[in-house]
Length: 447
Image 1 (cartoon, one colour):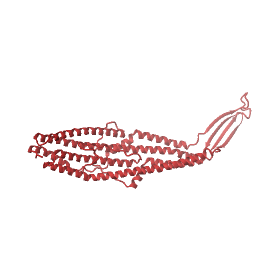
Image 2 (cartoon, helix red, strand yellow):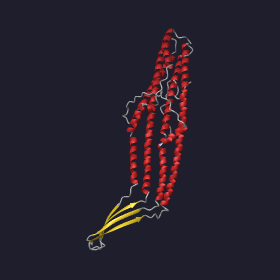
Image 3 (cartoon, one colour):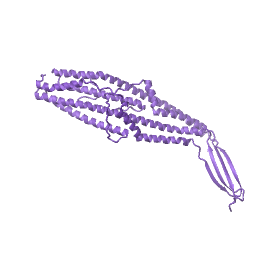
């Protein structure tokens, strides 16, 4: 390889100095974890206040709670009016003792304890509605946090791509100077121009993704579409999530899970339904009282007491007892299944989070090695033992590793959010798999 001329070296040295300063730059300062981010906190508050879905669920829960006192109320009393006449020729009231009017009132009274149990049975629907409100609230919070981390990821990728574009711009200038001085090849110049075009394409794609994330956050927070969201935090400076112990993670998931909470109440209410079905074997009562005016004659009065007789209990009440006992066992099995599935999902997310945090820790040495590889290539280029394109290739690998580091940190935050969400569904991914020009997917660090 020919040694560059003094003119070519004069154009290359400022570029190499800039790359060396970039490689030796300190990492960004550690910032607080995103739940303490004032921007995120404000977005969460807006979402809880303005979400139509959450408001609809709250209204439905209020409606279900209004049914509880209805179920525990007495049946409506009955008022009946009538007239009895002796014969068809004329009204005999006041002349015949068997002709009179009637004003009768009656009230049914369920067997003691039935009204209370009926109210408790109906309250199961209110508990389910409240669990639905809690699930919507948890899902809304988790979706917004995921979208916010996704926005930080896209903006971090844009910053990396801006650095990449600056490097290729400088590379193009150096390659052009070397080519014009006869010390470089036209291939280096064409390669730099091609990489700049690829970088420009990636910037456009990332800008589109950034706008999509802002629109998603505005929708979740109930804000006008395309309202700007200024973020001071960076994903690169975010602390990795704290990995809880298995016992702590499962206990917290069980405490937060609305579905598990609802299942527990369904088991208790199933036992209440069994008690109510057994109490239906007891009779209900009806009290009645009335007065019978007879005109000029003295009025008459009447009181009555009636009892329902469960004569067909072998086909009604006892079958209802067997039905509700079977439903109780079904609810107990559902509770056990819900607990097992929640524990499985929690352990899987916990294992993935442990692996992700370990990978984040390994990136400290990966980035050091990637930086060392770039510095070595840079030194070899200075002495004429390496090509200019190889320097740029190794530098692109360093940018690529930093992009993969960002993606891994976003994935770790997503797993932490999924643990807080405490559901049994699939874990939603965050962000994309950024392609840095000249390299492969951002999820694979280079060594």
